[in-house]
Amino acid sequence: MTYTDLGSDVLSRFADYDGHERIRRFEDPETGLLAFIGVHNRNLGPALGGCRMRPYASEEEAITDVLRLSRGMTYKNALAGLPLGGGKSVVIGDPFKIKTDALMRAMGRAVQSLEGHYITAEDSGTGEEDMIAMSHETKFVVGLPGDNDDLGGNPSPVTAWGVFNGLRAGVKHRYGSDALAGLKVSVQGLGSVGYDLCRFLHEQAVELIVTDIRPAVIEKIQSELPGVRAVAPDDIFAVEANVFAPCALGAQINAKTIPQLKVDIIAGAANNQMATQADEDSVAERRILYVPDYAINAGGVIAVAYEYFHANGQNPFAAPLTRSLMMDHVGRIGGTIDRIFEVADAQKTTPGRAADELARSLFNGEGRKTANG
Image 1 (cartoon, one colour):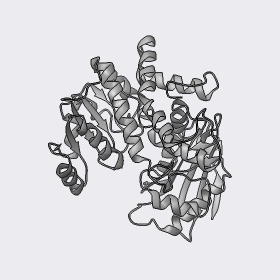
Image 2 (cartoon, one colour; image 1 turned 30 degrees about the vertical axis):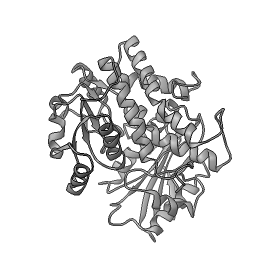
Image 3 (tube, rainbow, N blue to C red; image 1 turned 180 degrees about the horizontal axis):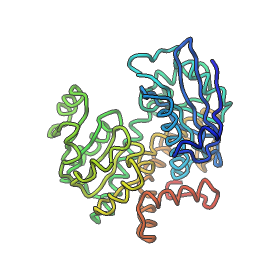
Image 4 (spheres, rainbow, N blue to C red; image 1 turned 135 degrees about the vertical axis):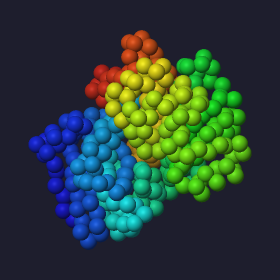
């Protein structure tokens, strides 16, 4: 395997470059690995963020993604009240075609080369089995199997629980009550997080309109959750509902889709939901309340952070590290979002800008905790 650290002369050509500490390119011809690891900021601690695998059209597209995602993790971890910085890794390739145990072990060696500056976890295109493979080559990996009462395993259900609490905070801010019964929620994407979010909402007698590119998943959810209605992927944006929950890939809120929206609230699990800052402004002009994505979807990173601290004999919190403590931490996502809305209303700005301001104050040392800390 060979690796190269990209210099500022290269990175400065990318609009998403934000003084990142390191972007490292890895290539391993033997396994077919071509990947990038990005460390954005470690002011609060080692950089934690998932490993994504996608068939990027070019290395430039992969670099853009790792720049955006690693920066987002700095903000997410700070706002979640975690003593961690932000990082991310991306692997170029279709996970259904080229991913092998050997490739993921090579990725583990790539992670190990950063000597603990970066801690990885699962993300889109990777899963628990991949984390197990990587763990043979590095100790800086989380999301490993654990018993139900332990810290560890697939963080997706925890992410969904955090999104559920954040969605409810958005409903309360918009309507004055967090009662969900009878509301309509449209959900885009029924991966692990989106599917579990639907379960939580269905239990609250929410009317669900869903979409996914996989017909088998649509059939499954309609058989398990009576009353769920499905629409074609391109039709989800025009569904009339109280809440739109994007739970697929990012940039789904854009100049093309915003005019179609007929909702009061956007609250979902996807990262980087707004294609541009101008799109958040457009949403605000339409009087749609946006729950910032990296605040609402922080449950997964909280879960794997607790796992990492436990595995390494660290405890930055006042109480013993237990699953109960971790779930309480995730449950406070709603309080963090309440604080974001307070700042946004007071400063007459958008929730996204308010969240950024709160996060920056934390990782730049101007604040000590949030409502979720």
